[in-house]
Image (cartoon, rainbow, N blue to C red):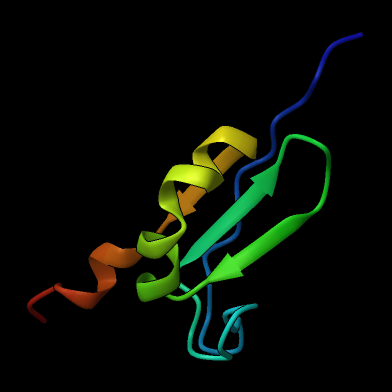
Length: 68
């Protein structure tokens, strides 16, 4: 069986943190299936434990520091 990886869609302002409801900047795809969304604060807070259960972490926290 071959796994096909599809590109991750960018997060939008409508994507909200599963912990607090703030705008999500991280999408964690779990190895067991499903996904979790986190704001930068909660993504950093739970980073260590998320890395152990994640198949992929899509991180857009760089958007917070972009000089536009």
